[in-house]
Image (cartoon, rainbow, N blue to C red; front, side, top):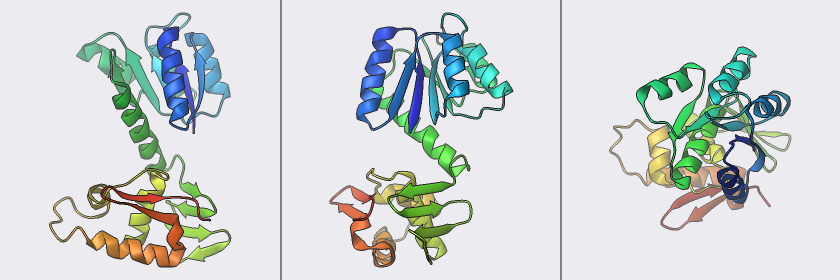
Length: 221
């Protein structure tokens, strides 16, 4: 995943870049709105973190220009301002989310991950690849190398939740929330049945159990 940070507060930009690089993202940083627009237009980014108050061109105009050009890259806007008008203006120009300074770094990372997951689910990246495993979320098909693996609808839905968050721990509660109805009040251990089925079909080492936390999908060995 490639991220672009457009932020004129250099110390903040550097701190964010270091943190996000440690999270596993490839990060580019620019400090000017015009340069940010150029980089976002020319580069292939999965998400842009965009400050509003920028030299050269403010964040509202950068966002509006990207959307006018048909670029649907997710945009998380940052601002030191606070107020409904500012948020409305940012979202009206096409931003996907809005965060007011000062903010928690943990919240920023959570917002970024949520936007990337939303993009994956909405068709921005319909094929999720984890090692030689490919999960086509549009066609609802799964391939291991060149071989297609037949899954039931529920098995696919559980695998999709793991693939969207590949490498991360996904809890039973998160799987239940996205795969079963929100009102489901049955035994949450039903998930273990589907995990076992997926392990048989995909190979047991691909789905790790993190005791007391959930499951993690990894590239097969």
